[in-house]
Image 1 (tube, rainbow, N blue to C red):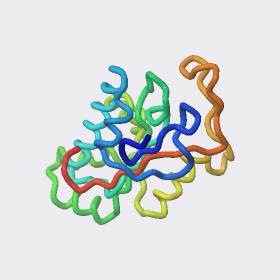
Image 2: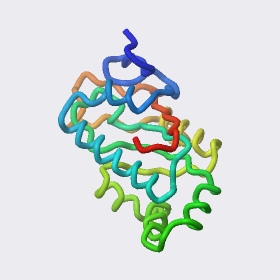
Image 3: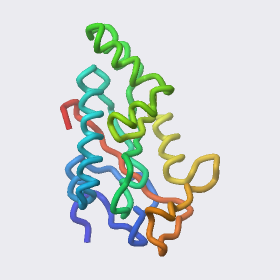
Image 4: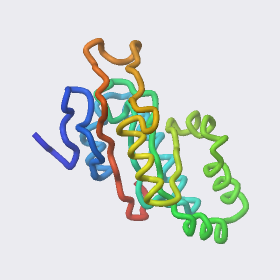
Length: 178
């Protein structure tokens, strides 16, 4: 039974293949079923809200990884954020020096481990819809690797079988805090 815009897991663990558009509220209704998930989600929302605070409001985000599976305790939220170049330019032009340093921190791919450690999320950036679609292809199918990541024997149940492809979530942000 579909309670929101997110389809049920097709195998009891993974979303059906494709990019499923939904809202933040839809995600919270379906995926906040453990305390660990609630904590990871709060940290992720803190990251999104900080991006918005410094003028880097994503047009859309893709959410992937163990957070959008049936795993009880995902380690983080993997996501890609579409932030157009004109949004970045406007942010640099209007923010103070402290916020400009934050912008530079978020935009530098070498800072991904620090961002993950601070916010519990892996941030991948897209500067165009085409690049966001490339991230979607990678998330759903493994991209040029041709396969999805193997299951984690420590955190995934024995019965889980990694599918050839899976679904991810897409959220369009309206510019306000989430």
